[in-house]
Length: 164
Image 1 (tube, rainbow, N blue to C red):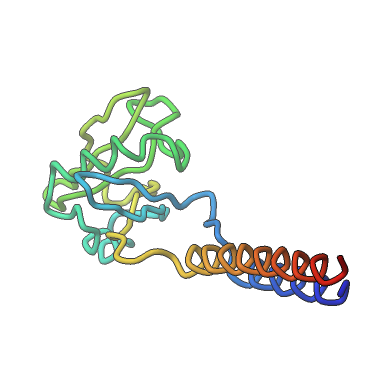
Image 2: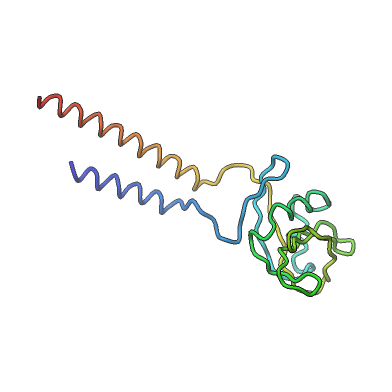
C-alpha cells in the first residue's frame, strides 16, 4: 500500500511543478471598476515602445489610466524619477499628444509628460479574460488530493471492519 502513497505524492508534485501557480514579481493583477487587468512593465523610450503602449486598455482613456496607476501604486517597483526625485512607479501613458501619462509618487497619482527620447519604465497590460492555466491545475490537483484522501479513509474503514 505504501507504493500507492508514493505514486500519488509524486504525481501531485509533478502537476504542481509543471503548472506553476505564481507569476514573476514584476507582474501583478489589479481590479478597477470590476475588471481585472494584468499589468507588467517595459523599459525604453516612448518612441521605441509606442505600439505596445497604444495597445493597452487605458490608451485614449485618461480616467482609466489614472485609476490603474492608483491601483498599481508601487507594487511592481519604483523605477522612475518624478520631479528629480527617485521613487516613482511606472508611467501609464494614455495619449501621444505631448505624451500624457500618470505616475504614482509618494502616495498620489500625478500627471506627467515624459520626453519621447528618454528611457522610462512604462506600465503595460491587458484585461484578464480567464484564469491562468496554472491556477486551474492547482485547483484540480487539490480536488484530486481531497478525493484520494477520502477514498483512502473509506478503504481503511472497510479494511478495519472486515478484520473485526
